Image (tube, rainbow, N blue to C red; front, side, top):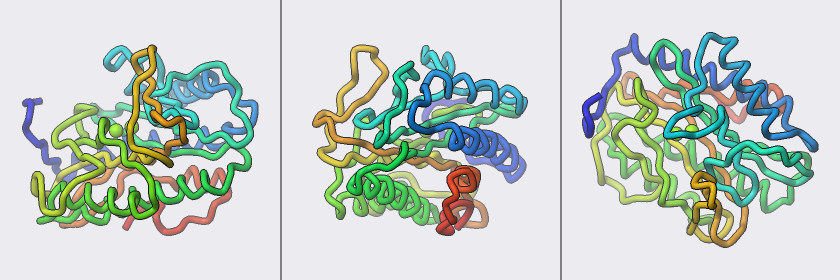
Length: 270
Ligand code: MG
Ligand code: MG
């Protein structure tokens, strides 16, 4: 893969990428049934690895840049890249589950933030708004727009609610590599950045903090946490531009089914 070049995908490649994304979607759906008070993050990680391998795919994150596990499990003030541990989940926690799988040579990379039991109302609101940010960004993925239009839509929606938009970590192109060009910041100016063309596939992934946007990395060199200790949420979809418009390759439908949530029509496609 040539550095710095955007790899536009054919419809055949996008079909394969949907299969990879859907392995991750089903993994998140399986996990949705296991995430509860008392669940052990490291056990969730093992279940996810077994599930992905049983689907004939490989965990994408394990060993990538030296990451030790299948899932990034980031709890409460952890933003992303949390390492699964043995601390049982507690009532009122939120748990961001970021999962990647490789199938037919292509990557899926998809995330959902779960509430553990009942969460405080302001935390539930953070989850809802972060999810909305994801779809606001996806709506901008039309031919002729620019990356900055996606970025701006996410930032505007988050900041309108008083939340902080993480800047140190960004979304990205996706394909035969987990991280391809272009970068997709969750903040930016309308009309700026690379133009969006047919066959572009992006992982769009707002990371939104309840408080200030600043983050720091823990001594484990992986776990990113909010500087102010307030919670952070993360939702991610894999999205292709097909016939000029966004087509979501991943889906929250399995998660929603497991949680008994009625889809808000933002689960599968727009
Ligand atoms: Mg991810
Ligand atoms: Mg990603």
